Amino acid sequence: MKVQEIREIIKLVDQSNIGEFVFENEGTKIKLKKTEMGTVIHQAAVAPDVVQANAAVEVKPAAAPEVPKAVEPAKPAAAVTEQENLHKITSPMVGTFYQSPAPDSPAYVKAGDKVTGDSIVCIVEAMKLFNEIEAEVSGEIVEVLVKEGQLVEYGQPLFLVKPE
Image (cartoon, rainbow, N blue to C red; front, side):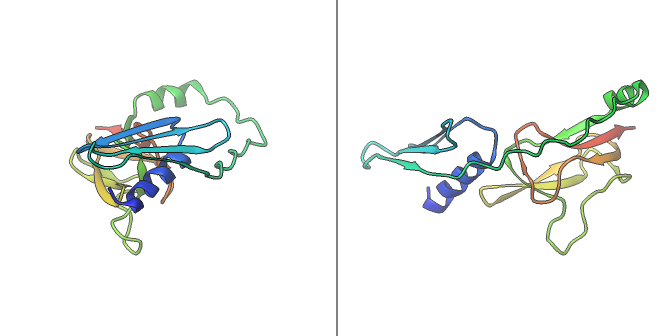
């Protein structure tokens, strides 16, 4: 692995809610673990014939999330029932969410658009690999739940779709 790839992994883990991350590939093992102070401890072990390295990397803790100033009113029962019938398109990996193939291109989909099961709805970038995410279901996009450039977690809902 290249140093830049390791730095990218450290950055992604630091910006997420993940407490511990382990990656193994072709004799290389990387283990990242957050401490209570927000420090990411990085241990890299490589193939037996290569020297092992241990390093501690000091990373600034992410800013605390904003606390809402007002309490949201409870949703009516009809809205809750309607939302239960919606399909959630979720992120298959940790990465950065992009709504379009390029910064100057229009978004793949927006609220109100019709999609089919194989329609591309967004891209999730992980370690410089851009992964196209498909709708998985035919229907209408009701809501986009993530902002452009936002870091997303594995399994995090990205879109709500009203199935046909």
